[in-house]
Length: 546
Image 1 (cartoon, one colour):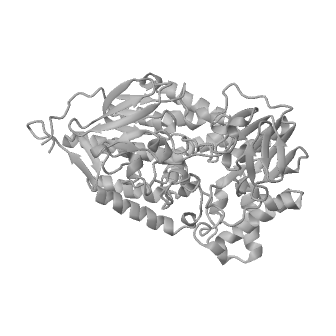
Image 2 (image 1 turned 90 degrees about the vertical axis):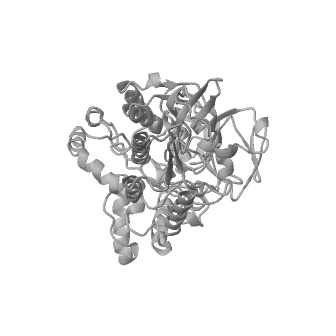
Image 3 (image 1 turned 60 degrees about the horizontal axis):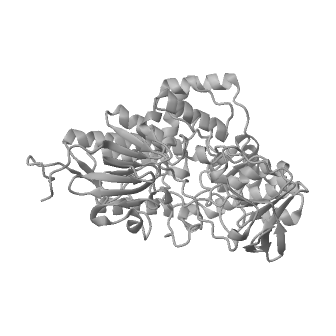
């Protein structure tokens, strides 16, 4: 028998993070009548949009969808200025939400969570922080973000470089003046692709160091006209209902059937329309089978490569910029404004590290096999330890002292992407095994938080002091997620979606590939059936856990 359950922890719930996920978790848990405290390592709210302030940073999901739906007055009162909002506008929105709903007093800023240890006797978590504050709580909700843990920089000789070092995800809040300087950008994923066109006009010369060419499509960004905003606000309920059941959690342009059902001319016409007017990540949903069938996918990849050759004047540069060796969409599709055209500037040089690998940093720049590039500043756009890093970097210990990092050594396993077997009362928002980055993450955040709150309400109704996913349920969900992944092309490619960018990280498709709508159906069904796959511990009349 275990000791009596402690009836009075400091808080009901600790929430880690104060971005989209953390703010909504604090709001929803407080509304449920629970006592909550949030911890945030930054000096203010915003999460991803607090840290990523590099020039050109903007969302690649339409603003109307990349926003909260939980409060209808908020939807009506806030008006987005652009189709794809910039970082400053998104950060203003999150600050507005924090103020409107009085969330700041719940958050301890400048405070990083360093540990969380579960005590089986009291069914509570002891949470340690960088400020030496320690609190005990019944539940912990990890809402630190899927793209918040930076990939370690491991370039040889980096410590010798005497110039300025910058990282897109830790951009100085006061900004940086790089005018007249020789600058290199390392990394051509989403951040690099957004940054390069904005940085090029500022610098004396910009060197773009590309390790892997990535597919990028034009955003077709534009202002949101007043009449458009009014129309969308009038139909917001219908729009939200649609995205909740959609595959990607966003407003969809209907797909045109299979790519292989059209002849080449008709297929090209349809692609051209999407390229010119659709814009953004919807390009991957031009046809129903681009993510599923290699032959269909090749038609889209060939189309984009042709667009690169049309845009980039120098044939050798165009060839280096053309992705090869993987299907389009199996690495995150980038969304840009004038990225490829930037390489037509005489003051921009593409350095293809596949052809001339980086050897080392020097005091004055970077040496490749082709020689030394003298630089005043280097910007790293080198990515993240996605989906798992924000959790495994914390010393989280569950039953028997097992850490989450140990539990996930052979690849992350979760129940519905929200709970981990052996870690009672711990919940993750958009963790591995959930749709997270494969769609509109804000839609998934709201769904996760609402499901967690409903689960805690059920625990209170049955008198439970702990909620824990069973190992059988965790294994079953991991199997279902693997089956969904196997139906797509993504699981076959090395990318941060599969953990391939982090040395030693187990390879698997980290997000659930079955779609936002299907995932919601599954989660709703689990709740409706009384949470099979979860064990609720109820104390006995003597005060012991049963």
